[in-house]
Length: 302
Length: 211
Image (cartoon, rainbow over all chains, first blue to last red; front, side, top):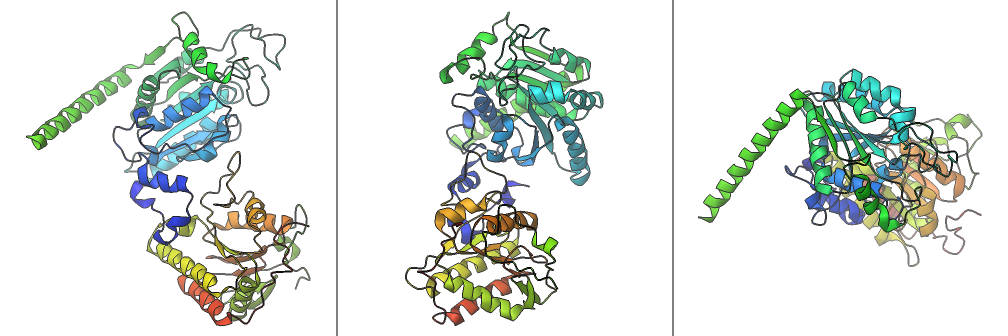
């Protein structure tokens, strides 16, 4: 689908709900350097959602959707969890998979899209919680990486099963006591970023979503590398403020506290050699494009 | 032929699929009324009569006409608007025709705004809220229309008409098939022709609310 095709029928334009009209009028589909700075000046690709007030996951959603390089040709694959409540309000193609199946669905989807649209860039992005990625769906997650499937896997890590009341998950930190895990976690947080690297991911990042510019950078890198080279993995801390006993306004601070150098979400990045080369090429092209635009602007004003 | 009739509900929480009760789809050139195969001409008359009798006759256009996918879709949208305008011209004071879109099939959380849209997963909300007692689906993909029509029959007393571009819908009370711009315009012409000959059921309307 291209932006040109998504026009509302003229004779029924007035009855379309305003969010759809706004998407056609001022969303950033097709914009080359779209990013988080478009938030506030254009229609976001997320409408009112039903996440809790102050939920960091909603921040993550907004930054990610603002940063996808090619939203009109992207399909997102979700799984059961808080994220699945948001996807109906997202203006990007998406599929809800069975719990844990997301990377298997994405594998087939990516291959089918390559066959159906051979001359066209189609991105697939998996977005699931830690339960779906690391516990229930670990098999599908790892197998997709082993096979070098060309799509991005994003894990919203809130360190427990949030929307079912706070059960222990593999990504929960050792010793943490949750409402439905009263004994406390007995073993360490699963080191999925390291596992991802060893499993063949070409770009792996472990961080929080406290900084929109950082989220934008890692999303763009992950999607571009997955498109050209192979699997990429982002583990983003999106704490469940309800389950860790925080108030609505404390989510941001919780992320800032957790990304300090000695903490578990200190920024960690792994980039494979081919991916480093690709990123350098992309940076060079970007620089060239900006210089040309600047030159053009200079000529126009002269 | 089945004795089962597809009638306005509320039938019950989970009404049987009309197909499972022996209702068949019409052949080209035919329609069905309450599950009985009828000539298309008769269906135009009946659909127009139901629209003119209703307190809140409503058209629900779906994504296949709401979005200008191609020239044909845009023309159908124009025809839908013409049918709605015709309804507005032909109804009597007290009747309130509506045109409410079904822009999305995904269930919306926490809820849709029933004043401005209808969702196939809970169409009853829009029907109850606006007290719709007769509606027509057009441009809705068949599987979503089937889901909606069954929910409406199960929980409301709304009369349902399907202007289907494929083979028709057993779960509607009246179904056309092979919908085209010409068929929509012909329905509008029939509404115009029957203007003033049908008594609206203003006082006795059950208002689409389950009893």
